[in-house]
Image (tube, rainbow, N blue to C red; front, side):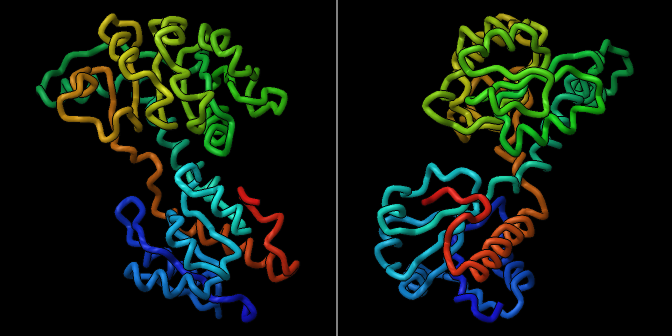
Length: 320
């Protein structure tokens, strides 16, 4: 790939892993390509002034103002709502994201949460801490109904991993006509019909105006009291006050929350006090091969750019 222009890696760390690890992974994946790391704000400005390709967690309008030659920004996150998309579009910069990078690991997190509540490992853990040898009743996943809201890369990965468990899978998505790896698909306007049949509700949708607060007092009331809520989407997809009220009234069997609203969850928040609520610190996205998958996406796109000479029809392209 000797014709590829230098790639600038902007500052920022992911899940406690330094961005320099991403740069080194790109060097190994893109043999012969000059991968440069910006370590300070001034270095970023200097490198962006001549860069055609930049990658990182984010880019600001101020940084973009120094990037007259920029043709592609490869975002290291799946979500791009934090980016100045209008400014990037006006500047004619193509944007790709990291969609698909999180699919396997977040799906495993979801399966773990479902099995934890099915076999009630949290009850066993409490009794172990007390050195209390006393049996307790559990559930069986087979024959249950799992509803997945959002059938993107993460939602599909969840559904595929559920197949061997003998469950009924329902999907809820913005465009139900697209179908999915489920037995039945509902639109957002039909969500209550799906929730009424649900034993495990998995939220894996992006945060949009349509999904913000989609799980509110009304939808929680539709869910059977024996249902478990699992949120790996975004905190504001769930009305937190309504969730707390529902849990206080034993309106849910439990909840597994990798994301919350607010986030981080304050120490004084009542969600910490429920024994049937599992909280992880927005950790489901962590995987030791995160940067490898990111590098694969960018490498594939660079190969396409070299073949076509255009920054178009790229994998995970968001803009233009």
